[in-house]
Amino acid sequence: MKIVAVTACATGVAHTYMAAAALKKAAKALGHEIKVETQGAMGIEDEVSASDIAAADAVVFAVDTMVSKRDRFEGKKSIEVLVGAAIKDPKKVIADALA
Image 1 (cartoon, rainbow, N blue to C red):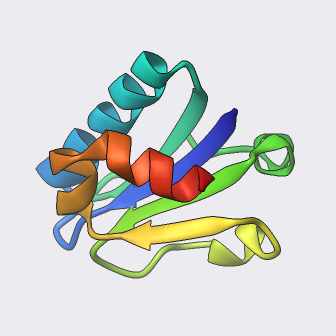
Image 2: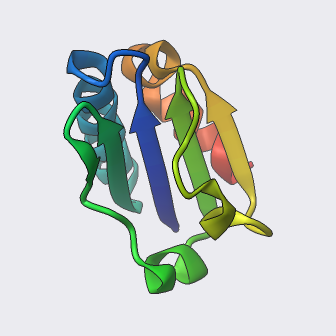
């Protein structure tokens, strides 16, 4: 399965990137493809493309704040969790997104 994700914590520093890393590791372990966009203190990094979004089976928002350009994801199956959930149990987050 193909997943796209956006991670963003309130301060846009450590937890944004910790959640991104955790989701990438979990997706790989579960045999899924994932592209993760971070929205942190440095702005949007690794921005997912329109084709990535179109090909995605699910979208994960692991966020503690507002998501920039969220309208790109309209119409896609999605789940929103707190950043901490993606860090603590990324496999569950991915399973819930694909369920």
